Image (tube, rainbow, N blue to C red; front, side, top):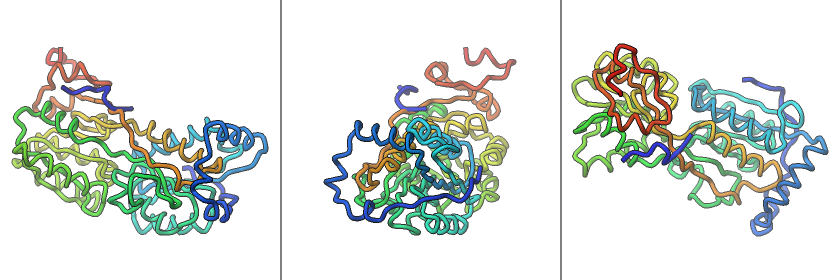
Amino acid sequence: MLNATFGVSRLTKAMMLGGICMASLMGCSQSDNKTADASSASTASATTAASGDTKSVAITAIVEHPALDAVRQGVIEELGNEGFKEGQNLKVNFQSAQGNTATAGQIAKQFAADKPDAIVAISTPSAQSVIAATNSIPVIFSAVTDPVEAKLIKSWEASGTNVTGASDMLPLEPQIELMKKVVPNLKSVGYVYSPGEVNSTVVLKALEAKFKPMGINIVAAPAQRTTDIPQATRGLQGKVQLIYTSLDNNVVSAYESLYQAAKEIKVPLVASDTDSVSRGAVAAMGINYKDLGIETGKIVGRVLKGEQPGTIKPITMNKLDLYLSPKHAQEVGITLPKDLISQAAQVEPAPKAKQSIIR
């Protein structure tokens, strides 16, 4: 049975100041770094705030959409809680690549030249670009599904390099159970995705492996550009009973166009991004990206206080939230089960004329 509590929920500033002392980045041994504890970190935070030293953090994302924006907001909010307040002793430079990987590379090179105290790279393409541009400035990735597969780190242990971060990897079993609740007797699932995005191809392979013994067929619908998404979606008509979307940045940034196409062909959308429910999905089970940003911000705070990123083990989130929309279900001709609705953390308002179907 699904458990909604099983899991969770530009400002471009002035050019940044300061740099990282190479001796502290490369000359200290890992064993010395591991002696930092919560008490010393707290003392360092107070000292930083009291001395008025200004830290600089560069943040980049491959594109702007609700989930990635929430991560950025969470990072900045948590840094304030850690004693680094924007406009006081913290300078933040945010740059979006606007969905262009070449632009992501240019941003990464500029950040490397600026030498901020830390770089936060939100999304896999941005993280890959930043890590290719510097091996000395601390890099904290976030909203990366599989940092090992993306070659950001070698394993899920502390990297011993300038890289650490927070992943948005989700367990697939609850996702599949949700799909089967939305569409009983599920036999075919469509998957609209960007073939060039590691976040998406990793999930596709994992779904294929999970679905095969269940007798469920997955139909991949590649969409290289956001403008290809509606056509890729319509191409699934008559082939699938449901379309599943992961946190593919191109797909999420253009979710409304995917929703319109899915509504035309009468196929429900199930997402791993809860913000997608208000944008057209029937159901979603995923993490809270603001919370992911907060956890990422805690890591950034530790780095700004002196810890080496290579000694900090990357993290994943362990809480999922269930969001539902009876309205979007009705639009494609299905009714959500009462027991599923009773487990939801949030239910989008159902059409008044159809209120009885969910009571």
